[in-house]
Length: 627
Image 1 (cartoon, rainbow, N blue to C red):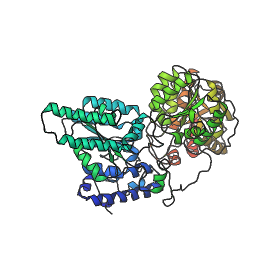
Image 2: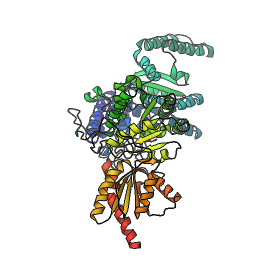
Image 3: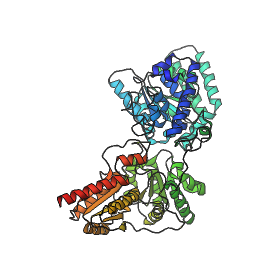
C-alpha cells in the first residue's frame, strides 16, 4: 500500500507517474470504505483525487498555503498530510476528525472552510501578509465551480486582480455544486469545456507567435494583444483575464502529470493566475458517478449496492415542508419558492418539479436570494425562501435592510435549525432564534412536529409580513400530516399541561423532549406544567403572565444559543413586567458545538429528556433547600 508510506506531502515527490496513479486508486478505496461507515462528502472527494495529488506534489505545504473551498473536498488533503491512520477512521464522529479543514487539527489546514465562496478572499489576505513580511511562499485557493456563484468570489477577484497579487486560483470544475450549477458563469464554463476549437486555435496561435523574432517591447505587447484578441473572439468575455487573472485551461483534472506541468509553469508567474481543471464528481465509484447529488453528502451505505444502510421511518421535516408548499401552490399561483444551490436539501426541487416557472435556484448567493425575494413580495408575489439555518446568516444584511425595513412579506423557511450532527460547528443552526428576534417587523416561530410545520407555513403566508419558520434536520416525530391546514394566530402558544412546582416552556424541537422530562418529574411527585411556545417573536405575553402567576419555577428550552435566544426573550419580558420568578434557561452553551450524532450531542449538552430532567430536578431541589 503506497498510501501507508505517505506521511507528509513531500513523500509524493519520490513517486513515479505510475505510482501516483496507483496511489489515486488506493485513496479512492480508503475514502469509500470510511464514508460507507461514517457517511460524508463522498462524490466531491472522489472527483478531486488527482487534483490534490498534483497540488501536493508540486507545491510545498504548509509553507505554501493551500485553501479549500468548499472544505468538504479536502479528505484527500487530510490523507496526504499525516492523517491516514486510525484518525481518518474517526471522520465526522464525536471528537474525531472534522469533515472540513480545521486549523486546530493540522498546520496544513491553514484556513477553516465550511461555507462556500470564501477561499479567494482568504488567499488575498495570506498573499498580502506574505508580501508585507517579504517572504516568498505560494498561496493557492482551490475553489469548486459551484462556489463561483457566491458574490464574495467576485469581490475578492476584483481586488486581487487590481492589486496584481501573486496568488493562484485552481478552479475545480465538475459542472455541479450539490445540485446542477446555475447562472451565466456556469454557462460560460460550459462553453470553455465544450469548445475544442478554442483550445486548438490557442495552441496554433502560440506556435505562430513563437516563430516571430523578438523585436522589442512593442512586438511583445502586440503579441499579447493578438492572443487576447483571439481569445475574445473565440470565447465571449475572456472573463477571468478581464478581472486581471492569467487564465490556463481547461485542463484534464484526472491527468496528474498535465496538472503538475501547468502548476510548475504557473509558479513562475508573480501575478494572479486562474487554472481551470475539469473533474468528474464521484469518479471511480459507479454509484457516485451516476448519482453525484445523492453521494454529495451521504449517510452510511453499502459499498456493493450504494444503498443506504438505514431506511427512513417517519417523513423528514424537509419532505413535509415540500409537500405542504406544493399543496399550497396548487391553490395559490402567487406562491413561489427560492433556494440558494440547495434545491434537493431544502425540498424546493420537488416544488420546481410541480411548478417549474415558480421555483428559482440562485446559486450560492443567499444575500441576492433575500433581496430578490423581497422584490417579488413587494410586487405582489408570495415568495418562500428555503435555506439552511446556518446559510441564512450570509443574507443577514439583506434580511434587515431590504426585507424587514420595507416589511416585505417574505417567508423564510429555515431547514437544519439546531444541531445538525456530523457536519459540525459550521453547519449547526445554533443562532437563528437569536439573530432573527432582534430584527424589527419579524415574526419568528418553530413547530413542535410535522403537523405544526404544515400549519405554520400556511399561516405565515397569510401574515403578510416578514416571517421565519425554523425546523430541524431529519425525521419528524411521526405525527400524521393532512391536506388541510389550520391557522395559527401570531404570538399564540399552546398549554399542554399545568403545574405549580415548575412549568417547562419549550420552543420547536424541544417540546417533545420536554414532555418526556415533565413526565419523569411527575413520577417523582412534582407538579409540572408544559407549554409549546410556538413563537419567539411575538411572545404570547398573556400566556407567559399566566405561567409566571401559576408556577414557582419557569424553565425555557430551546435548541439554539442561550445568548440572545428564546430564553433571553422570556427573561427580558419578565424583567420588564416586574416578575421575579426563578427562571432556568436550557439551550446551547456559549461555545461552538463540535461534530457528532445529534443524539450524542444532545446527551452531552443535557438537551435530551434525561438531561432536562436532571437540570430541572436539581433546580427544584435547590429551591426546596432554600425555601
